[in-house]
Length: 188
Image (cartoon, rainbow, N blue to C red; front, side, top):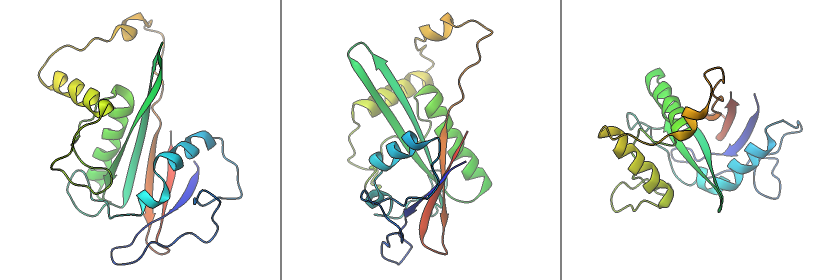
């Protein structure tokens, strides 16, 4: 389990950088962890100014979020690769935390979001939001599964029954209100 500190905006407070910052603005610890590529990806994708730029609200109940679950998937094709990721804010209640984790896990496993797909990542607006190509793909797959339409999954049929499915890696961020920083720990 690895921990990284990111700045976090309190309810009425200003954005405060952590005491030890590197050139890219993230907190660096003295330890080197085996998940460095994943941490670098998260920093590049969700830079510190975006994580601390606004208050986050729980996807399940709408209260102020204290945890963020992150999940990423990769698509490989002959023309190149792409990756999609999703961040699900959740509050401290066990039901919301569990549902947030399950949403991130399902997205990492199936590439389909079970939650609200049309929400702006920057401001949180739910109206007038257009879906990008990746979101359109996920939204279409979700619509197909909710209507009972069968999706194609050739690779699953090619696997033998003895092969175990890979474990999906999700990220859980928990807030630390005492020093107004957001820490996340990778869970396997």
